Length: 127
Image (tube, rainbow, N blue to C red):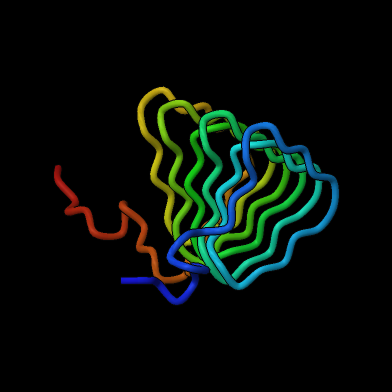
């Protein structure tokens, strides 16, 4: 069954041999296997494949990274870093998943942090 954010049952795709400089806006999912220097804004999901590299910004609902990213990510839901991911920059997300082997060198701010309780608030005091 086709998802609402896919076109003809497939996400938009930038192939490994493709280099783009500029701004991409879409309502569909996007997979980057090539190189993007610029920004991508979508209401869907962005996937950076193993050979993919983005220098710039991403604004979307979910991001899966297997390749390289340098810049700013704003994801309303989940940032998922696979074991081959290399990320540098700044991220603003709700949830973060990092597999062993991923390189995460970014300033991270978690949305809805007011709902997160401090670990020390619920500890029992012992003598």
